[in-house]
Image (cartoon, one colour):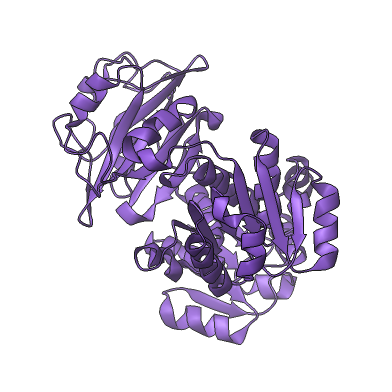
Amino acid sequence: MKIVLVGAGEVGYSVAKDLSADGHDIIVVEEDEERAARVENDLDVMVVRGNGARPSVLEKTGVKTGNEDVSLLIACTNKDEVNIMACWIAKKMGVPHVIARAVGLEFTDNEGWAKDLGIDMLISPERSVAREMEELLEVRGAIHAVEIAGGKAGIYVFRIAEDSVIKEMPLYEVRQKNPKLITLVVSIQRDGKSFVPKAKDVLLPGDICYSMCYRDQVHELESLFQPSLSKKLRRVFIIGAGKIGFQTAQRLATRTPGIDIRIVEEDRAKSERIAAELPEVMVICGDGADSELLVSEGVDKADGFVAATDQDETNLMLAVLGKTLGVSKSIAVVKRSNYLGMTEHIPVDSIVNRNQTLAQVIIRYVRYPGSSRVLTVFEEISSEALELTLSGGSPTVGKNLMDLHMPSGSIIGLIERNQELLIPTGRTELREGDKIVAFASADTMPKVLEVLGESVR
């Protein structure tokens, strides 16, 4: 597929790199010489220098009347007017599919904007990041958390603590001793390697377990993996009242009654505006790096701490400071992917990359444009969770899971049927209309779709 990508910042570079590796013909449009040179030197893509919102520049990429070579245009600069105009021009020139990044949250407040602008997908990473942040705070023992089935279930990543009641225990025994807990461990990471576990596999301290679970049972699951962290969320500090800080505070205030949320923001005008928009949140005008201020406001009794300023290094430093001052769970928001592995080296519980979140959404759309959609990509174990609905023509309809001959390293972890959720067993029979969540490595997922009778394209 020939794809034009407007913008070669962190998001654009990541998307270009992955889609080029997938075998697509990528043309990158970038006005900044340094960014353009980086892409040109590092990636096997074509680079056109110029403003992606100008028809004459897009024409050099093949986006012009009468040319049907370009299948998709992705505009992911940090300027809404450039992204929207590039998509509008591309649609007028006959490009069948266009995707735009939305910096302003108002463009994603409702689906009408995308439709009226003729954009197939209008996306903002801040909302996705805020959802993940809420889950990470609510489930403090989780390293990573992803909503599935409309929030009724999730994939939660836990490390088995030394005080875990299930360490040294085989999975079948965990199930026997907790019969009311409906969960499925779909992958285990151990000593840098990952595998799909069998019932007889024993859980060891330090294992990182990827588990599907009903949302209303997640704290019971958490108490097995991380008993010391399984407590109700009462107080959260958020440093920085930007889009992510605001969205996180708003979600927590709306969905967690009685929670004590404290935003620390240095800019007085912004502080006053946020205080007016979120009256249930305490807004403190001050320096988030001022340890005396944080202690006086009760940071040592906080369950969660989110560093969400505009600077990566500042957020990492603040998250370390929060942890040092006694916060139960500390999270740093970053833009650069090279910081993600630092949780192994500094005292921070989670690092969330907002640009990676956006890049993954775009890549999933390109890889799985049909009825299926990838819920998340776990880069640490090179795996994906994919949701799809079984059609009447699927060869799996009427068969039990044990008879499907699923590829090694893959598993069906959840079925939504008639608005009810099922954690399946080998004897579960698949039916037309079942919405299933499959878990597999990125290389194996196309084979999973083949078995299920669903096409990637």
